Structure formats: C-alpha cells, structure tokens
Image (cartoon, rainbow, N blue to C red; front, side):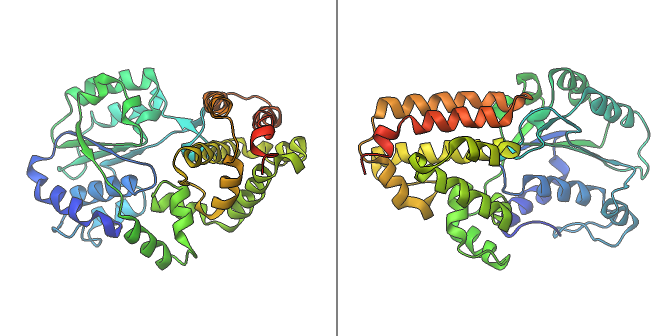
Length: 331
C-alpha cells in the first residue's frame, strides 16, 4: 500500500465507510502532504477484486492493470497544457482542459469493464478552467452507478461553488512536525527541521526542497537577500531568470519572515537564516516594508504570463533593495 504513515487513521475511516462513500469526494488540505497518493490508493482499493481493510491486494488483474497505468475503469486527470505557475512556484503550472473533461464524460457512458466500480481522480481540482468545470457539472450531479470522483485540492476556495456543492468534503491533515521530521530522516534528509519550516510543515514539499541543486540555488539567492547592497541585482536576476517562480517564493517568504521578526521576534520559514533576518528587521520602517511585501505578493500574478523573467525579478529585487536604508544600512 502506497500510503504515508500519517494517513493510517484517515484510511481506516474511509475503508469502514465503503458502502457509504459519496459519488464525489473532495480531498482538501495543504500541498505536499500526500492527498494525491491517498486518492490514488482509494481508487485502486475500490477497483481491486479482493480488497481488505488494509488496502488493495496488489495481486489481482485489477491491481496489475492499475500498477501499469492501464486500468480500463480508471482515469487520472491532471493538467496537460502549461498556463499558470505551479504549486510552490515551480515551473510547469497548468490547467485541466475542457477536452480532458469531455473524454472522462465519454468514458463514463461506456459499460464498466469489470462490472464494478469506476473511479476518476482529478487533481488539482483548482486547475479546472471555467469551461472544463462547467463540462464536469452535470456528470458530477448525476453520475452513473458505482462511479466515484476523487477530487484533490490544495485551495478549495478557488473552486466554483457549483463544484463544491456537488462534493462531500474531507479535510486531509498532514503529520505533526516531529513525525514529519522523523519520516524525512528515514528518507536520508539531513536537518529536516529547516526544510519543514520553509515548506510550511508539508513533508513531501520538504523532501522536494532537499534536492541538492535546489538547496544550492536557495542558499545563493538568500545570500543575495541578506546583503542586497553588495549584490549585482541585475546579475542575480539573470541567474534566476529561468526560475522566477522559485525566486519569487523565496523573496516572499523572506519578507514575511522580516515582518514577523519585526512584530514578534520570531522567524517562520528560514529558521536556518534567522540571524540574517533579524539583522534585516532591525530599524526597518514597517510602512515601507508592508508596502513592498504587498506589491511583490500582488505581482505574483504576472508569473502566469510570458513576460521577461529577468526584468520581472530584477524589479522585485530593486524594490527590496530600496529598503536598504532600513534593511541593509542600519545594522
């Protein structure tokens, strides 16, 4: 079974409710805690020919088809065409197209291959465009018998109210920090606490953040933020022009930490750079700091558009460096 250790109790609740499962279940919660894997495992279990409370058997033809990605009664619908920034600023944000939804609707008009359940996993649900969401509505409202839609969402508030109203909502929680850190150590992650802090406590995001090349990029960029008066900002922007979303995420978290440090003396995201953030916070003007944070946060919408990445990032770094009288020179 491909569940994570922190999902055991929720899995027990789902399997005990097999006969009462709704036709559309919305699994929602923070990114990076394993909602996609939970939805896939639930679909595999429903399609299994000899399931148990522990999960799918892994041996029957249905499980083998599922493992090979060719189960005739299952569809996984994920974004196909690049159109918006991905979760956590990664390159490759996309939308689920109306054509993909229409293919699912057509698939559900056919007879079940095994005469049992048919399952559709759709994730992330907020990547449904307006036309795609509207194409899905009628089928969500009146699905064929023994059909289940498993929608996965990191941001359920972005879903159309009409989609939300047709789903039973199930909040999926991540692990406690100690359990998440222990799991990351089992994955050979060194000093996982700082990565968990940056990832907002999400262990799968923290595992992704532990990739050595990403760590090196992070350290280089944060070093520039710590000493903007000594940095060639144009060169730094050019260095990260192909990873503007990633750099934007670091800059926003850094500013958030500076603001939090100003207010409480605490650091939330970059705990391994706490001293540099405290230095940046000393003597800062709250009004100017908040204005820069709000502006750069709002400018994140431009990540959706094919603008010049270097110019976009350079404008943010200059805006940050203009706080130098507060952030950089009063140390």
